[in-house]
Structure formats: structure tokens, C-alpha cells
Amino acid sequence: MSKFIIPEDRIKLKVKEIAKAIEADFAGEEVVFVGVLKGAFVFLSDLVRNIEKIDVKIDFVKVSSYGMATETSGIVRLELDTTLDLRGRNVVLVEDILDTGLTLNYLKQIMLMKQPKVLKVAVLLDKYERRIVDVDVDYVGFKVPNKFLVGYGLDAKEEYRHLPYITEV
Ligand code: IMP
Ligand code: MG
Image 1 (cartoon, rainbow, N blue to C red):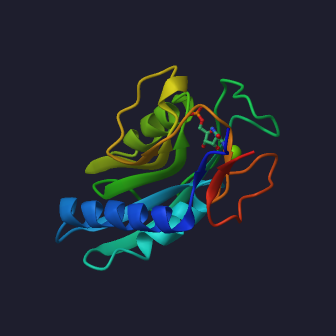
Image 2: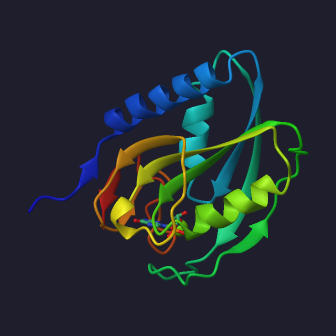
């Protein structure tokens, strides 16, 4: 069987589509994009460079659950918190992949404690077959099969994040 791959040009179109949906949803307002390090750094940077019609601010959080393993430990830890004041702000949390849902479920709770005006979530990939907890997300790029994927920010033991496409290892 051939390898699962999402080529660079398909990612580019999809990211633009998501950016335009966010612009439409927040027309005339400002949005703080909060990227989840490290995996979302590529998606976030391409996403915000497609935003032309609304004001943009950028912040980051960092969580760890995997360490150097490829299986989730089930324990999510906040390693870096946002620095901007999110109270009363429109926030879009930007994550690379939704897998078991544990990470985003945890992060959504953390973000809601900051009392934003609106909290939405954008994920590039949705590995839906692996879900343990239900998480509502607002913008999804691609539904993907249950394979370990790398590239476009996603890593396997810190490798492959720089690849401009997504592929299985
Ligand atoms: P969850 O908490 O199981 O939903 O996992 C989310 C996190 O696990 C993501 O932020 C990724 O860092 C990592 N992850 C899940 N699946 C993959 C994959 O296929 N490749 C690389 N990282 C993954
Ligand atoms: Mg990772």
C-alpha cells in the first residue's frame, strides 16, 4: 500500500480556507491566535499570514504529554503559559493535530479560565478514530487515518518538523 501523504499544495489551500473562515467569523474584531508549541508553529505561521482583514495578535502555550514517546502518557502538563491578557479577547487556539483529545480538552479548560470573550479552536488534522474525550473544535483541516504522521510541524522524536508536507513515518 502506498504511504499516506498530504502534499504541500493541498495544505496551502486548506490553510487559506481556514484563515478566510476565521476572518469572516471575526469580521471587524481582533483575534489572539494562541499556538500550541511545538507542533503548531508551522500551521500558525502560515495561518496568520493568510489573515488580511482583521487585527491579529499572537501568543503561545506549550504542553507536554508524549515526551519522546509516540504514545500519549495521558498526563498533560502546561510547560509555558500565554503572556498576553486574554480576558475579554477573541481567542483562537491553534493546534497541529487532534488525537485522543486529552491535550485540547485540557488546554480549552486552561484557556476558559482566562475568561476570553470567545474561544475557538483550529486544528489542522483530526485523527478521529483515536478519540478518548470529546472535544468541540471549530475549524478542521483534514480528517486523517490512524497513522503516526510527521511534517509541517509534526514530529517523531523531534525529527521531521521541517517537512513542507505531511506523511506517515
Ligand atoms: P492528544 O492529546 O492525544 O489529542 O494528542 C495531541 C498531541 O499529540 C498533538 O499536539 C501532537 O503533538 C501529538 N500527536 C498526536 N498524534 C500525532 C501524530 O500522528 N504525529 C505527531 N504527533 C502527534
Ligand atoms: Mg509532538
